[in-house]
Image 1 (spheres, rainbow, N blue to C red):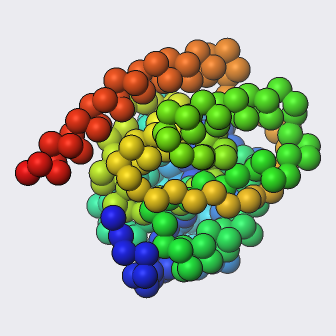
Image 2 (cartoon, rainbow, N blue to C red):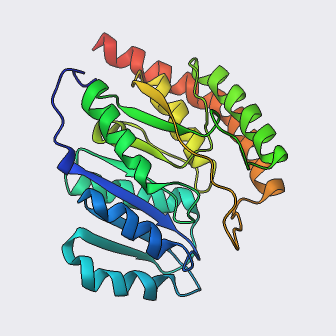
Length: 252
C-alpha cells in the first residue's frame, strides 16, 4: 500500500471520461473539467452520434491536454474504463478521476477529490450521492441502496454508492486488480477486488443531478440487474481466489 503521508503531485492525476452517444453533454463536461489543468482522456466507446466530432473540435483547442481514444464498436462501459486505465498505467499517471460524460456529475466537485487526496492519500475514492438524493427517481434510489448494501457485505467494508461512476483510483489499484466484467458491473467489481486486496477506500459526498433535459440512462434495468446478481454469485469464487493468492504471496 501507499504511505498515506506521501505527498501527491496532483498534476500527475488525469481525468478519465468514458462516453457512448453523449454528444449533447460531453462538450460541456470537458470544458468544465478543463479548469483544473489536468490531462483529460476521453474514451469514445463506438458512439454513433456526433460525440467524436464534438471531441475532435475541442481537441484543436486543448491540444495535448485532451487525449481521445476511439473504440470502433460499442464494447460497454467496463471495456471503455479498462482502455482508459491501461492508458493511465502506460503513461505513468499517479491515478485517474473518472467522471461520466452525461452531465450527471458536477465537474466542479473534482476539487473535493483533489482535496481528499492531498489530505488522506487514499487508494480509491467513491463519490456518494446518498447524502442528497433529491431528484433521484425512487426506483433508482432503492436499487442503488440495495446493491450498495449487498456489495458492502461481500467487500467487508461500507461502500456507500457502488454504482457511482465519479471516483478516484490510484495507479497501484489499477495495476493490481484484474477485471473480468465488461459493462456497468465493472464498477462494483473493481470495488470488491480493491477491498479484498486491502486497498484503502473513502466515501465522499457528491451532488445528485437528475433534472437534465433529454437525460437518458444507458443502464438497462432488466439486463443490468441480471448482470449484477450474476456478479454477486461470481464474486464468491473471485473472493476465494483473491484471498488464496494473497495468502500464497504472504508465505513467499
